Length: 251
Image (cartoon, rainbow, N blue to C red; front, side):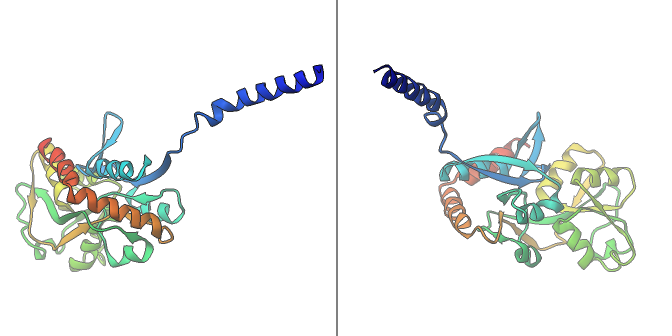
């Protein structure tokens, strides 16, 4: 009898030991988002926290799908490589869909239309693409601005007139300091930078519109499909517009 009592006690203790690990186990799935928090109002650091349009939209999508969101802040030109290596599950970073990027990743439906503009000093006489010939141009490395500078401004690439920066804010500071003549950057971040840095202005209307989308590993087709469905729902019900309006009103 003692033998059986001992066995019962051991069994009860074993089950009691397991309960904290099984009964409290969360079924919530986790997705890691790669971004570059140097691109206000889409992603930026405020009080040690990464915030922005892309962040809030990704959180809303993950909530809709039952995922917990974790954010990795990386250099912009490393994001697609991080996606390839599965360091992140998707990328949301104000990323424009381009043929080159589509070779490396699959993209969701587009969720925002943007355009590239110039930031120059207020007394600058640069008003056209032709005016940029022979000028020193700053870009954030790996962005559409870099591709435009290389492809559309005559002689810029061949004459080493393009300087890449790890953050748009550093390129803007270089304009302020007279190290470069202009920065090519997306319009909404440009507005944020000009607002916070006196003596600068925006030159608009030089480049074609472009579209932002989130990027996924080419093997994650099922997850991409789920994301697209959730994104479309949140676009249709006005959630995305509320998020955009929130950050526009804070300007």
